[in-house]
Image 1 (cartoon, rainbow, N blue to C red):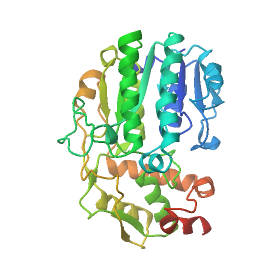
Image 2: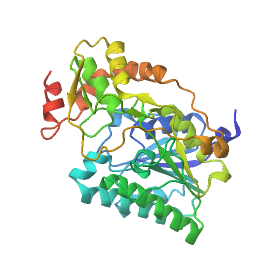
Image 3: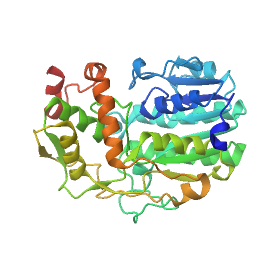
Image 4: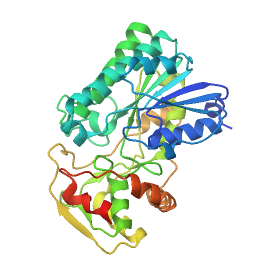
Length: 347
């Protein structure tokens, strides 16, 4: 077993937002690496109990990162490592509810850093967003030293704020923080919904027999990263000393055309409803996304292992295996998305 995996044996690990897709998969990985206790801390506002691994060394605590009473309950256990994944996700939701976004992603992140510092936590790994930090005009592939002040949603602003607070706590209190920047995560564990990522929503529609709504003109690209590759990057970030204080892209390092992705999902699910064109969202200003993963390779030894097509097949299998729960819990309430998604929940 690799040294970074051995590192977690007998450790107490806290995962804020641990019931989500990345968090639940990270929880399972840590439990299987013999962590003494994996604390899943989540307010369940965007997660479901059936998605939390039921294992003897996994402890679920319900609470919000903005609730100091709840934070005291988990930090009193003196976690050795904190993965701060909790967030008010993502762009469109932050535009609809900017104050809630600021409270969760701003104040909540500040409080997590404060409690980690007061408890002497050995490492904090912050989940930032490579899709947000770089703005729309940064050259490709996106490298960590490039930042933009021209951000287009509250979510992008508060993800940047979390990185700036990380710098403050590192410089002022010597809190060991690593800023990991995720790119277009997909994979088992993400239940579709109005504010969810494109791949789970496309798979949900395709299995339900509905056309896939495509914004833009068809030549847009994204750096889709399979969730278990992100989990591997996080495990590495919690171990390697050279990454402390650094910003590190956790991505696939390859571009996928969104139109071709939609066509492939229709093919894999047998969906004959095709594709429809919809209006581009105002905040969506990036034509292409491609991350440089050279720093992750250098500092963490990170290399993504899952080809995109294989990841899609594994994600579709997870949908089929959990279809009853997913269909029950997929959230497409009336509102701006009802014209696109609302009818599905009635089928």
